[in-house]
Length: 372
Image (cartoon, rainbow, N blue to C red; front, top):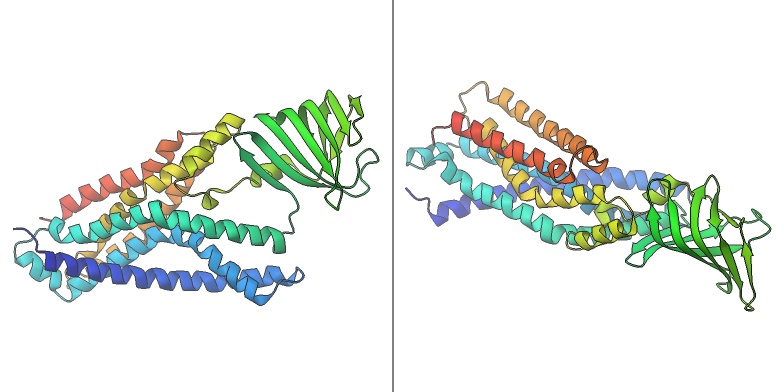
């Protein structure tokens, strides 16, 4: 017997409403705690208005929301199935000859559609908002003066020159460009450094075959300094004071949360062509692609623990087990993604394994526990 569109729409509508209400409640709680934390950090800084803090809390929500999506899918599906079972609606549906797969299909469809929307629409919009949040955070809370970007032309870095740190370098800031970066060791190739004073006036340019980041300074090899008046001189021992460390430089790159799903492939390619390791971004990219399958697995898990008659006294235990399983999947996924980012396992399998394993296990469990 084929399930009708009216019944399918009814099930899909109930599940969608429950999911949106639960997601809104979770985001509200997270926003409250994030805002309190931002207010604490803003209290240690100067000239950070309350309106800006509230705005930063809202801008950060998409980052947290995408982490909460699997839990919202799982818990809302558990509540929907439990609600329909408690009211005997699903029992009537099954007595009418419909299988468990037929009345689960609308819920599965909503979950998969939500995963596709998160990947193709919610993630790009959220990336813009999170990028704005990080920009405000670096400006008002972290007071970060160094900026790093990677393009097809290579690495670009802007840093201030510490006042009084050296007599051979003028005070102000520099913009450093390198065509290639050799990992590990952070050896820059074909380096150019532009020097500016505090009023943005160009002072001089330094060209070098290579440069390396040492403890507290950049060390240039075979450097040639071009003065503003046209004079040049060679400096075999040229150094540039810096407060950056290798960890600071790596952490300054665009985080995965600020990169749109549609822009990730080209950015990954640019990083790899420049010489950087893009494993963390690859894991993030594949993880976004796996979201629809993971959301479907969450619905199957919810069905296992919720499709029980009200008289079954083991329902509470199964429900608790479902919550535990949801958090177990989250930690397993985070662990595998960390392994993929560190190149311990291939990024593809680091991202896809949790969703694929959970979906297959959920499929087998529903088939064994239900007679549909």
